[in-house]
Length: 190
Image (cartoon, one colour):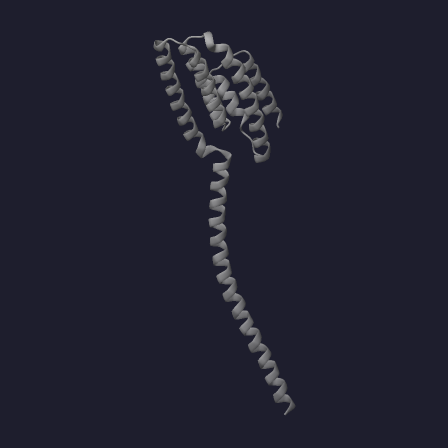
């Protein structure tokens, strides 16, 4: 991990601890995920998944007394953060925690509002997953390998045809040359 990533990771952790769930914090998370090495990116993503899961669980337990609007904003942040690190399971867990808090409430009026919030969060999660899917490492790797294999097969097919023609003509020329040498030897012996 580069020093810039370490600094960004420390800043991201401090933003989470200070409970600053805004676009700036998501921007920091996005900057952390810029990596040239796939292996280190996957390790970094796994570490961020664990961090986000632990922070989201602890904070989602704390927000039961907050207003619906605040809950929606916080859950929207976590859903988007989980989507950035490609953690769909974390998104689902955040929704389950919110639903568990709603099951305790008995007021149908509040429950209806909360179910609308859950539907809104699911929509945000689905959009985030759709947006992140083409840019995920797995999707990029698969696309790169596909284009590389197509290029390689084109190169191999044209190379093998040219090589085959070149090799067979060189082989024929070699046989003709050898036969001519043998013919000259036989003619010189007679």
